[in-house]
Image (cartoon, rainbow, N blue to C red; front, top):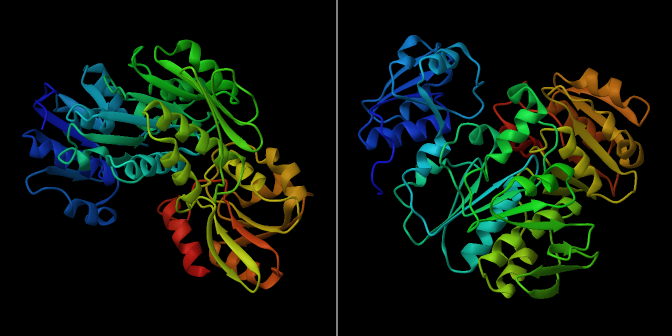
Length: 447
């Protein structure tokens, strides 16, 4: 265990979800006086409380002034930054950090790779982790992908490769966090209900490389207008990847092969990805760039790319019944994700699309051309059904099913051999589910 890096004695943790429990237990084991505060009532978080180490004090149903009796506040991802207790904490100059920052202070691995982006980060984090595992490294995959970094602090050694999925929520409260390799896949409108403006959202994403230096690497999407421009404000060595541009320096796809033009080397190789769509070619390009600068043998990179089956809830093949394929894309929590999912399929008008959930405040009109071209029936669920119907009216036949159970039953009734039933909600899940994983599992159970 590295030496104590946080010069604090009393710590308040906001949130008693997976991240809050993880960082609270870590800090308690390290000798801190830990207090956990959760706004949800006791009956909703009983199971989480049982996961806290004995001796950790907590409160539920309120963020009281007890939170402010601390040298440091650790804010769980997703908690709004301007709730009253945090506003008061800033007035009192109490430091506010993310779990990512705290855990970072207690690890000294061989390499830290951090991946962010509006879409694709889970796939790229998983795929990058697989490449390093296949190369024989002690590889830890953590962060926003499902297991907080704090859970792995004791397991990480000087020989470990740590591959992190990091969200804008985690990045907005960092101080010293610095990956050796950072990667921003894309930036499109999302989470503005939390960040307030697009500029604030971009600023949070940029924090992934804010502490990097000339000895580090930053992998950026050349085809994304925002990420392409970020290279000018990054101190690390920038490596661009592109799906549609032949780069003199970087890594690109020429329609058939991957091309690497880096470090005075020109390498070309074919890929045969199992996961469909342009976005997955981009994901594979970014993972290849990361692995290449770490000197992973090309054969290991190629074999991993070609054997990778994707991640759960992201264009996940569930089952084929009577010639109808069922696809779980529950991880689609914004309009751009649904757009990417639809682009992954051929131009046959054979998709029965299930959409809806909690609206994030963005129009669904960008989907109109693809829905008109590819979607046979649009089945709507959740709170956003009326808005989606208004935005996509006239593109295809639209049926409001209310919930996912009714949508699946109706899809089974109308689907014909050769059709695809695609759950790609384009919305958050919190109106009817605990999270997108819960939504995806329910869909698969119904299938």
